[in-house]
Structures are given as C-alpha cells and as structure tokens.
Length: 188
Length: 365
Image 1: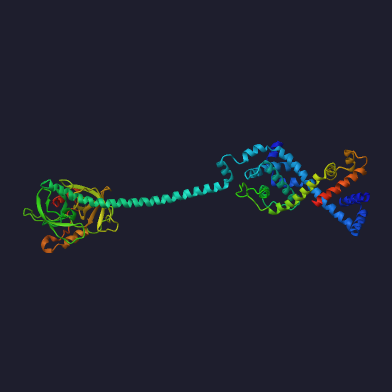
Image 2: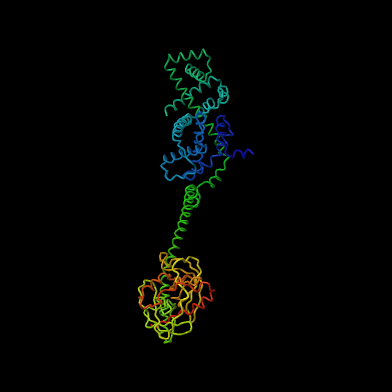
C-alpha cells in the first residue's frame, strides 16, 4: 500500500503543503513521481543516470527553496516547472562541458525559469564553498563543527564523544575549528 | 584568547536570541561602540546562514538519496533511455511532431482525395466529351457507310439496292428524302409499296439541311390520291409518341418511339428533334409522324453508340425545301395537304394508308 502510494505522483497541492510541513512522505512521493521524466530527458540528451540524479536533485532543491521562500505560486503545473528547471540546469551543464546542446529532445512543455536557476546557482556556489571549506578543514574539526552546528549536539555531548577532559577544552577546540573554517570559507 | 571565545559564544547567543533583554541591549551598545565587534557579528551571521543553508541542502540531499535508492533506475533507463533502434528513438523524441505531421498528412490526403474526386468528375466530363466527339464522327461514318454500301452494291451489279427512304410531298410525284442518301448519285430510283420502280430526278433545292427532293420521271407513275398526312410544324413536345416507316431492308419497317429532345445533336441545334426510336441504315429520309399521323420531321441520322438516339429534321424545313422549288414545276398540287385523314385511324390503319406514300430510294453511284 505504501509502496503503491509512493510510486504514484502526488498532486501539486499535496507537494506544496508537504514541503511546507517538512513531510518526508511528500518528498519521497514527489521524488519518485517525477524522476522518470527527468531521467528520460537526460538520457536522451547526452547524459547518464548519475547526471540525471544530480540534475534532478538540484531541480528539487530549487523547488524546495522556492516553496519555502513563500512566494511560490502554482502558475504552471509542478511537472512543467520541475521539467523546465531540470532542463535549464542540464543545458547549462552541457554547455559548460562544451558538449552538444543543439537539437534538444524535449518531452514536456517548458516555461521560463532562467531567474530561478540563476538564483539557485548563486546558492549552489555558497554551498560548494562551504562544502569545500569543510573538506579542507579536516578532522576532527569537521565533525565537531557539523555536530555542533548542523546536528545540534551540545558541548557536553561533543566533549564526551571526542574524549575532551572538560567542556572548556571542547569549546576552545570548537572555537579554533570555527575560526579556521570561517577563514577557509571567506577566503575561498 | 579566552575573551575571544567568550565574545563568540556571546555573539552566537545573541544571534540565536538566547540573551536576556538587558544583555542584548548591552551587547547592541557594544556593537555600536566597537566596529570590530560589529563586524564579527555580521560575518558570523553570514557564515551561520551559509552553514544553515548548507545543512538544509545536505539534509535534503540525504533524504533524496534515500528516495533515490528506492527507484529502480536501471529498469527505468532501459525503458526511457535512447532506444538502440533509430526509428523508436525518432518516434520518442518527436512524438508530438510526428503526431502533427501524421494528422497533417491525413488531412492532406483527405483534401487530395476530395480534389481527386472533383477532378475525377471533371475527367469523366472530358471523357464524355470525347465520347461525344467519337459519336459525332461515327454519325458521319454511318451516313458514309450507307453510301459505301450503295457503292458496293453497285459494283456487285445488283439491279436494285436500297439506300434510303423517301415519302411523297405531293400527289404528283415529288418525294422528300435525305440529301446524304442521293448525294453524288449517278441514278436514283424509287420503289413503291407494290414493288414498282420509278426513275427519279433529283431536284436542286436551296437548303442548308440534309434534305433532297426527288421527282418521279417515269411515265408509268400514276398520281397518288390526296396525301393522307399534313405537316405539323409546331406544337411538338418532348415525350410525344412518334413513329416512322422506313426501308432498312427490302420491305417497309415500322418503328415507334418518342420525342426525347426538341434540339438536335448539339443542344443549340433547333433544326432537329432528338427521337428515342430505333432506326437502321435505310431509315434515312423516312417520315417521322406523330400518333395522329402528322409528319413532324424527317429521319436523318442516329448516334451509333447510343441506342435509340435518332435525329430528325423538323417539318418546318420540309416546308422551306418545298417552298424553294419553283411553283411551275410543282404544279397544281404543290401545296401541302391541310387536312389529315389519318387522325382518327388506328395505327395499322394509318400504316395501311401511309404505305403507298412512302418509297424506298435506290441509289446507284
């Protein structure tokens, strides 16, 4: 039953409400619902399954940010929106890789989503900066920062997890790590 | 160092709204007074936002990866990926275009078909025209055939051969027939119903129509009783029942039909009737009579390819032909009979009366 539900495409309203409520089920159904469409597009336009996954996930992120920002209006079908965004993202990637972008095989209607995709690219740059900064930060700093700031662990938890003798040491360590991370992030 | 760590934890608490109102006010005062502190607050805020975004995206990606793991990508790829077959590929990529093209082709074919239908009809008309042209030539050839028959008969040296039919215009031996029957003849004879042959002379007349007047020259000819029929020049309508007497063979043959058109072979040829009647070579020059025994025309030609489409020269032109003969040569009985003694007779009684006035015309060339 749940399998059947997850394989069926949710209605546009369900998706929007689900995303606003952080519903994991809504995300799963959304993801499963439109992935074949994007996969078909990518596969038929010089891409492979991994490209499809990357592009599709970026497209979903764009949709997420759009819905979360509160100014999402269902001016078109969600399907058309997702297809258009993913198409735009993939064509940009193709041209960046100097791969053939002419003679695009299309399967759905398209709407103009250039602005959204550009906004997303800006955000994506920030994301990549952070990602690369974290990678360069190295362990144990990376884990400490992620545990504290992303996983919301307390200093006490971190202290125990990393075996610091007291929380002050942990705090000092976290402070040093953060300073280095900030430096990496802002300088890159 | 310790101060720095303290400061940062205060900044974090401040940004997270964890400071008390008094502490927050004091801290904001510090920010205003110390640009270095303010800068730290701003940059920390930007950084934390970037971190939050990063965390959110990472979280989302994690969930999506989980969702992705549920999907059987390989199966989907086989279904949706470029098909090894070029045709299927083309079909998939251009479904819509092919659909449009197909419907366009379909419509074009319907249009072409209907155009073809139209042109087919036009074609048929043309064909019909050609047929008519053919018929025209065969009408002519029919007439020639009569002539050539005669010529052939002549070579065979048969003493007598029919070429057509004639009927009495007057009681004193003037006979009307078709010009094409006697044209270019060396000698012309007529034979009456009793089998008597009389040599006749072709009287030159001024007529554009296919008419000829013969005059019996033989002394053995005894003038006929008054003509039983009269010329009926008007009041003939389509569908009127008509009949004719002619000599397609060595004896008189009766043929019955109806007026099928008041115009001749060409629709604008008002000098002839078209008659639905079966005639044969030899009928040419025979009288066309209506059911009351009025002569309404002279049988002159038929369409060889259309059964029963015969043309008869209208009685009006018989009168014209008659008028063109000088009054002297016609004699007293020149005027056509005004009375019609056949009117109340049955058909075979009419025929009995008529047969003496209808002659077989024999032509030698």
